[in-house]
Length: 86
Image (cartoon, rainbow, N blue to C red; front, side):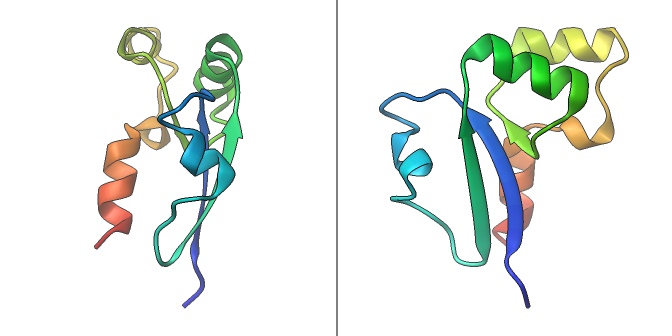
């Protein structure tokens, strides 16, 4: 079975650097990490759903739902992680 391919956008700081540099991973997962500033990351995810998962401020996420811009695909990354781990 081929690995699951996911894209993740997040900020570049000490807690995310192991993901960005490929120092950590999960069996069966090909993760592409795209480090971006908060403003660019939020805009690209909320408006265009450019990533499978995104570090997103909860206020931004809730506002996108209130404005009708959130789709089923833009669920919290924890949901995606829990379904791939099984």
